[in-house]
Every structure is written in structure tokens, then in C-alpha cells.
Length: 281
Image (cartoon, rainbow, N blue to C red; front, side, top):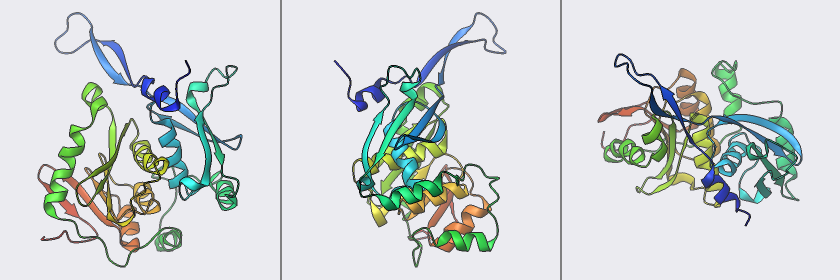
């Protein structure tokens, strides 16, 4: 019997066992578990768009989130079909996702053309200066005032997400991202070897479920806050980004210009608020 796409993703290997020699203990090699990393090719309307290095699993969500945060689609309505490649002639079919845009999604097709020549994929992408930030803010939602978040909410976020990281427990080598309602509900959580991928997987799950949460949701990430992650949070119309690590200067600039609440070093019972005061602080 053929598996459904979600069943295929559930069966995708995310952990691989390898033999290691532990030092300074020495002795016989022992088994260790490492996170799987493989390429994923995304094809839209038959044309290659991007290759992402990711941990297999949640590939459809990753694809939907990537298309959302790269500005190709706005929501689920822009997608006609999304499925893993099943062509037996393609030996990499398990690492290919095929996307068809909806018949009336002409704006999405126009944005796709722009995205094919514009990917912000590294901290050295050359985006700097107030003119660049000002022009970028024109393309993302902005808010008149940053969202105030209660200290109790911020202090509990990391522990809640960490408790749900099943694959991290086996490998210690995955990032996590979560979308959490300000009322406390965990709306989506994903793990991946890349923190950008983890974010796209979490956001993509909400796209596929047609459940993008809007103003009352926060993006939590296990690493630092870069410019790109602030951009992803804004494109998904979230109001705050909370990270375990440090933000970059461009992340602070963009968050400040857009009215996004940016919180860093949220761990160990403390945090820094860079663009808004937390409620009660």
C-alpha cells in the first residue's frame, strides 16, 4: 500500500548511528547518534527553485514555510498541490518536493520570478545601512508599537519547547523553532539541523493547516537572532521573536523599524528585551 505524504515523512530517517572513539576514556568504539543531513530540492511548476540542506522529515512543511518566508506565497490559497516526488526514474525522489501554484496565483508567480534571483541566505549577504532597512520594511508588515510580553511567559518558553524536542534528546545536534500563542498554547514546533529550516518547518505547518496565527503569536528559536529570522517572523505576521542566543545589529535595526518585539538571551531565568519593554518589567 502506498504511503500518504505525511506517513512518508514520519518514516524518514532523522537519526543515524555511527561508531565513535570516546576520549579520554579510550576503549572499544561506542555507538553514537547523529542528526541526518541531506539535500532537499524544491521544484515549483516544474522548475528548480532551491536546494536546502536539511534534516529529513516535515519536508512539505519546510517547503511551504520556505515559500512563505521568501515571499513567494502569502497563504495556503496560493498552493494548488504540494507532494514528494514519486518518479521511479529519479533516484533522489525522496529528497525532492514538487509544488504547483494555484491557477489564479499570478502574483505568486511574479514573486517566484523575483525569488529565483534573490535569496538572503547568509549574514554576509551585503544588506546593510538605513536605506536598505527602510526599503525592506516596505515589503513586510509593520506595527505601531512592539508587543509587550509578560515575564512569566518569556521565562517559561524555553523549558516548554525543550521538553518537546524528541530528536534533540537523541543527538544533541538539532535546532528548534516554535510558534506560541501569547495565551500559552504551543501552535507549532519543528526541529532541524539548520535553525532557518526549523523556523520554516514550524511556519510551514501553520500554512498547510491554514492556521497562520496573526497578531497574538511569538516565534521562539533555539539559536541567535539574525536579520533573516526577524524577516521570517515579520513575513509570517508574527509580533515577536524570542531567541536563546544573541541578536545581530541588523536584527535589532529591522525589528525596531518594523515594531517587532525582539528578545535575546532568553535562558537561565533571564532575558534581554531589545525593542520593547516586557509587561511588568
